[in-house]
Image (cartoon, rainbow, N blue to C red; front, side, top):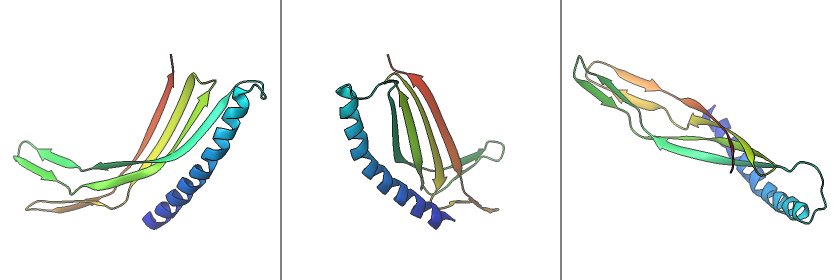
Amino acid sequence: MKRSIMVFLTALLIASASGMAFAEEEKKESEQGERGGIEIEVEVGAKAWYNKMQHREPLKDLDVTSAPTLLLGPVVEVKIAHDFFVEAAYFATMSDYRMSDALRSITADRSDIDLAAGYLF
C-alpha cells in the first residue's frame, strides 16, 4: 500500500511540474485581458512533514518516544479572483511509528487531512 502511495505521489509531482508551464501561460493571457469572467487558479503539489510521536503516562512516570518518520502527501490549492483560496492536503506515513517500553512494543501508522480557506487582503 505504501509503495503505491509513493508511486501515486511521484506521478502527481511530475504532473504538477508540467502543469506549471500551462498555469504561467494562462496567467499571461489573463493579464493581457484575453480571458473574461472570474479568474480561477489551481495549484497541485506535495508536502512533507518529518515528525515523531510521544506518549506520556504520568501515573507510571513513563515517557515513550518513537523514531522520527516522514509524512508525505499531495496538496491542492484553488484561488478564486486572486483573493479567496481553498487548500486541501492529505498526509500518510511512509513508514510505521515504532515505540517500545519495558512492557510492550507498539507499531502505528498515521494519516492526516489538512484543510484551509482564507481571503487575501
